[in-house]
Amino acid sequence: MLKLIIADDERMIRETISTIIDWKQHDIELVGLCKNGLEAYDMILDESPDIVLTDIRMPGMDAMELIEKTSEIDSPPQFILLSGYGEFEYAKKAMKYGVKHYLLKPCHESQILESIRDVAKDCHQKYSMPYLETYLSCLSEYCTRKMPYVIIHGIYTRNTLILFFRDCAVKYDNFLKFLISVEMPGQPVRPQVELVSHRNLCSLLPMILDKVRRYSIIYYIHSFHVISCCNYNVILEELEQLSSSIMGGDSGKLNQLTGLLDEIQDLKFLKQISSSLFLKIALNNLQVSTAELTNFLNVLEQETELSRVKEIIIRYLESFLEKQKNMDTTSGMVGQIFEYVEQNISSPSLNLKFISEQKLFMNTDYVSRKFQKETGVKFSTYLTSVRIRKAKEYLAASDPEKIQNVAKMVGCGNNPQYFSQLFRKQTGMTPSAYVAMVHGKTEREL
Image (cartoon, rainbow, N blue to C red; front, side, top):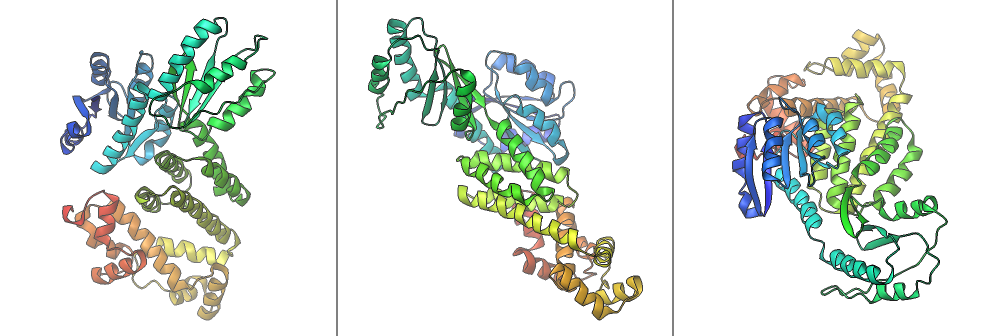
């Protein structure tokens, strides 16, 4: 049974998380609740937990300091961070210490459990990798007897074990035969062994990186002991560079990003880095609204097929490129319309005739044709899209009981019924259902 500590300076949050889940049912022992980082650090030293679920910002010692200090102990725990949208840069620093899980507030029971299960797998892998342990045990015994002067290092990922050592100018025929002959109970696949020589470690490194870069967890073998390493940051940095170029209008980088995504074969890992990636994009790009990002991440989270997740990510970036392209090619007149609509979306009388005659001092028919030619859509379609986008932002930010106020805020006046019908037609769900989805609740709970 794995041990868990929950740390949060808000009493309601830590106690709610501790009680909404039957931890024992999931083979987890909840050993303590802590109200700040100092308490958490002392409890980590006393209890040696496997998992720490902690808020990022806490008095006394924040999560970053806690992670740094616990990284110095012999067996540091796995961390899951609770963070807000504005704290991603802070959370990113923790990734350097192997932290690859964080939950965006507000989060619900299923999200917490999914992260706990994912971290638990890493914990169990760290403690128990029977096939690899058996193989290394046999290898250690053989090398002690037959190759006592050869120091062997290794890297292991899923189904791939790379051993490397200095050439001692001896024949390795017997060693290769031994590697092939090792039997592991319950393992139906026979190993395939290949011997390759390299001039030095510099020429070996590219081959190793090519084989292991796609995996989230990499195991380094030293003196036949296994040390787990998280490959999260390397892939995330490369994705960030490519995505930043794409968001800047460089469509040529899209194929490179597609190739990088194709290399990732772990669904949960892909979802995790995608969430981190698009969260950072939203923080640095005013064109991506919080509501739009929340909706995208919810769609991503619900998907269960690896190929579909990759497809959703690529389509999202393609849609952004198209939006960017349209904005770059619009005239000053259309730009003024965009700006005026954004600033006056709450007006129920907002229409193209008023904007054309009272603001642009132009003929309405001419403005209508010009707008549709440059944007590809009618003004009415564009106006509806802005109302829905704004509605999503207001719904995500407001209290559930204030849903009816959003109708006024997006120009639907005192007609919440019309607003609900319009929202449902455009999104496929009612405003209350959307709020429930964003806040991780059911409509009955609102």
